[in-house]
Image (tube, rainbow, N blue to C red; front, side, top):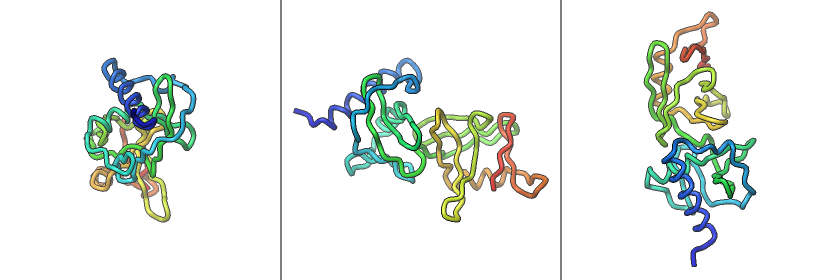
Length: 178
């Protein structure tokens, strides 16, 4: 007989797989009962770890990412019938590349999400203990930490604003880099 956490992993993966066939799952509409915590951590470097082991299959990470939901400061994997709490050390996604055009900056995450910065998908830089941490909003309250190489490319593409701070423009919006 499978352990309860194994059953949850399987049912979450099955729901994500099925939803992925029809387009992005409507996790914002799903409000199932809380079922407990799952031993899943998304590390600050973008690594997904389940029960102490790195999830090595990108397809599995993509499935879990597709049913990720944020409520306040908490993160959950949800299906229409269950909600499992998980741990996120920083941001749930990692932006690993960006296409920087004249009017748009389009990011790609390590989970395969593609998002163009704009009014609904802001770029921001937070100060964490004196160190800048750049992020882009991906979807429904979920952010991606922008990796170092991509952030350096953004800095190179930025223009000085009237106050000397670096400004990026994308999708009709302006973003200050610091």
